[in-house]
Length: 473
Ligand SMILES: Cc1ncc(COP(=O)(O)O)c(C=O)c1O
Ligand SMILES: [Zn+2]
Image (cartoon, rainbow, N blue to C red; front, side, top):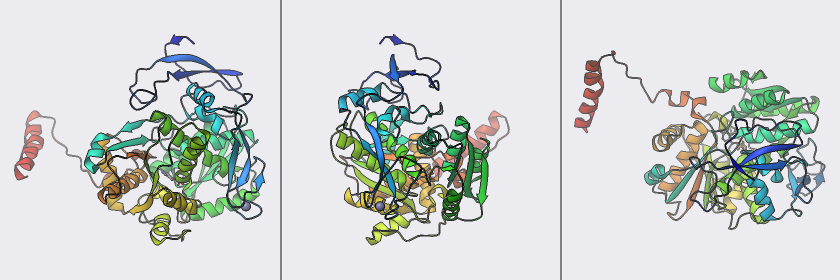
């Protein structure tokens, strides 16, 4: 190892036997852990072999979450015995935690650093592209914490991904798997962010793609999908109609639907958000997590990721309290939580948080289980609270989130107001998407003041008005 300057290109060379990565020196003893922004960048050359290491962990099979039946690691998502959902099972017996931590820290600056915990025999997979998501900022939010009377608050800003939402994580994993399984066409049913990510990652991989969305999506999300050269299909109906259509098409088309027949692999991508949080906190756990819920995949996989690392010995402690956030206009999981139900009753969505508008959430029952088992809760907030949440985050942290983040911050505020957070707790709130994608949500809140290009106009119309407003107060 010899110190050197950061190189210009970080992208892996496809097909190479070994790839040169940069690794930040382990400074996990420093405040906030090893990977915070603004940290002095000390780069070292590390050779990280692509390909399976002898003795390393391995994904072993697909396993039914309900009855435990096992299946090979191919494109399937439902148990043939009981129709339960399938998830990837791993055998970590060949890897020890110290070696695993070393491999992570020597890895790429993105999700592939966690390749030992992702569903590929070859790690990192040769089928990945250079469009690597991950290592998004975890920022300490003291001004927001003061406003809400929270002791320690962190914002995980996952809008800082290639297509500006956490969906890049799940899609990068699903598309690498699709290529490994030999598919040349990928597809998805999306509420918007998944559409952006599938179109972009398919473009990076050189795959054909079909993206199905409700036709009434935000313009920014439609344009931000079409630009990548996908076949974008607007369906006249709700997301649940789109999902039904895609499940039907999946039966008759030889395509990899990232969130249908590749769902077990897609879901694994969300675990990287948990891994990163732990690493960025200096290999420590939060006490409480606040996270938005649409299908419940992200929420439950944050739990699974933390559980995996606890079981494996990479981190010590216990599962944080899990607080889920939904929009009142589409809140089947919050409704079931409030009523003590084990399953959700489907709803017809009507909310500005379109990215969370799934009326019949696939992972709803598991989200309920996780919130209850960890002493968390699942709450909902109305459209005005969502807009206020967007403003509150922007004004106290400088982070502009889309409506889903407004839901998260509004639920965080609600929780704090009702005394649901102890001041001793370390809280992490997940911002999963970018504000520029949902401009309609804030359009009516602000008016642009225009003036003539003169100092007099500025003094009279801007400073004069500020003074008048201050006097009136
Ligand atoms: C910005 C954003 N946050 C959170 C979610 C929730 O995702 P999940 O379906 O995994 O619950 C979505 C889903 O589309 C989303 O777009
Ligand atoms: Zn089963």
